[in-house]
Image 1: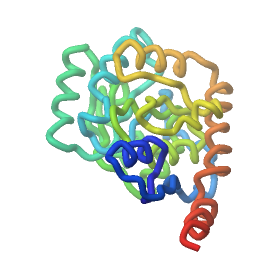
Image 2: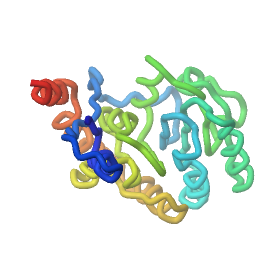
Image 3: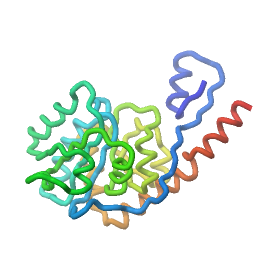
Image 4: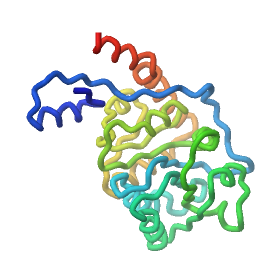
Length: 240
């Protein structure tokens, strides 16, 4: 059996299977450069979620936490990028309304070029819809931090990609990447509002240089453990 992380291996054992289990994680291709590319004319800093918009991702409590962490601070926007599942995005927008979080729907291309309508640049939360290809690359270069407040993951590609772009990450234990905490590449958060808010406040308040240091640790971690040459070698050795 092939498990992506130790928790998957533990689940295989808990299911009652006693056959050999190899723990080999996912891998990613590193971007050609990790230089930042702020969006045109933007004065905002940005916290990014990138993935499918589904209840298990923890975005409901993340938005409630955002209202607490960002209170009175107009320097930051929470960018939620991804495709909607089970009409969950409508539920998230209702939470924004309930907590007086101004939000806007802006596709990634317009958001990155700052081709915005009145009020969109001041919105606290931005929903971009799905993002792929060059837009995804530019979005990852234009943000300042990444969050995955998930209740359940296997081994999330989005966190590996965020690290590859030198971004500090806020994540839960359920992301199954304890290496990130050990390497000081991530801020530990729980799934509850207060814990997420505390992590957000920590990453919002530190100097730019500290966020860049944490993100640099993430890039080093990915280079060491999660690139295709390393993972391909592990797979080859396993099958040999």
